[in-house]
Image (tube, rainbow, N blue to C red):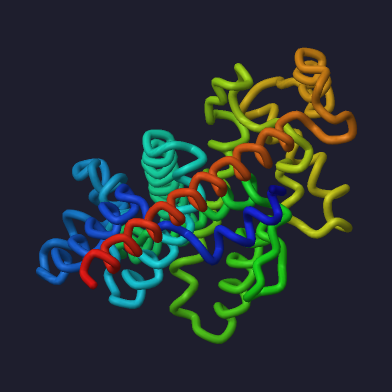
Length: 305
């Protein structure tokens, strides 16, 4: 059975949402209920002027939605994205990704708010409560881009690799019509970038004895249209060397890993092949689980009759 067949079948026969995602959904609901208490927001949301004192805000802010619409969108996104990523990464790695991306996104927002205050001297940047799951969710979309980049989303008629870029583009466009959405844009951008940083450089790959994803298919410039990539690549390389030091070039890294396993196909990178294999394996496991669940339900129905 091919990966494409598995992908199509899994969309119709998914066995259900994972326990971890359900638990995080409960946390989001609980966070929304708690912040209805007037003083709770100042303790749980990120308020830059108080962050040094209330350092836990860097963690709690990502799980506090202040509007019911935010809760619904966050839970739906988490459940559907999580049931694709968690079986492939594993629950421990999935939770680690969420924790790290949330913490780094909050730190970026805190730094940006302090910087904006010193540039403008407007106190709104210091005292406006900032919270929401959108940063984590945008980081998870980067995981979808990495795992199933060429999977076409039937309801949007685009490939999954464009999801993170599309979300940001939509919010930028909506910002011209509804100025209130501007508050979400920095968190979305930071969450997307931190998700990419984690997957590009830090995620451990025991099966390949490596960290990160050095493949050309996951370069920073792939978030942009083809004609902009010659302009993006030089700047991205400079930032990469500043923040992460020197690395093997993607082509060299691919060559080294391919040398260790000559049975792999030549024209594609090793990491891209591994992603497809892991995705196909996870999808097949979900299909089998769905079939077992359906068989058990049938047995129960026959027994009741």
